[in-house]
Image (cartoon, rainbow, N blue to C red):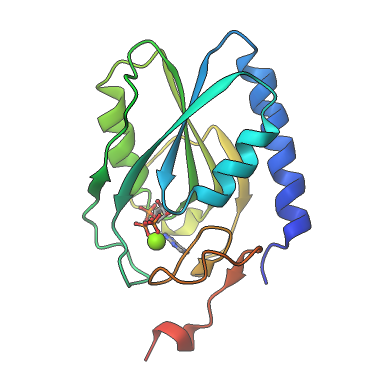
Length: 173
Ligand SMILES: O=P(O)(O)OC[C@H]1O[C@H](OP(=O)(O)OP(=O)(O)O)[C@H](O)[C@@H]1O
Ligand code: HPA
Ligand SMILES: [Mg+2]
């Protein structure tokens, strides 16, 4: 166990309050969740932001059944919302190499949003390959492969209610 349910809940509440204060009631905020890792965090965060808002989802993948990024980010499902003139907040579970968000940020900026910020629950600074600006951060974590609360290894463990470090023997054989 790295981060337990109580710690997650407290941090999500604080992030939600900070986001609500920063954007304000007239921002018509659009949360963009990056599937599938974002799911648990996005649903808890959305409930912690006391503002009128909308949400949409985009799906990308680069890890597959590995603990290392393939380096190729594939778009699997695009947004349904027109971003032009919108205040957009991307919601991610984790920034590791940064490749996913660097790709998404450049793609979404081309659609002329009024603003584009990034909120991530977890950040693994030691592994960064591509620079991305992080506006809202839950926790910095060490260089370990983590699972739970939406995060997977080969699609498993997403439903754990806490964040745990995956035992290397699970992926090293
Ligand atoms: O900073 P990076 O090294 O790019 O890693 C972070 C990304 O990798 C994971 O997604 P994944 O490709 O595993 O898809 P998933 O969300 O469906 O698990 C995670 O959910 C982030 O989106
Ligand atoms: O540590 C991680 N765990 C699960 N998925 C991930 N995608 C990037 N880093 C991770
Ligand atoms: Mg994954």
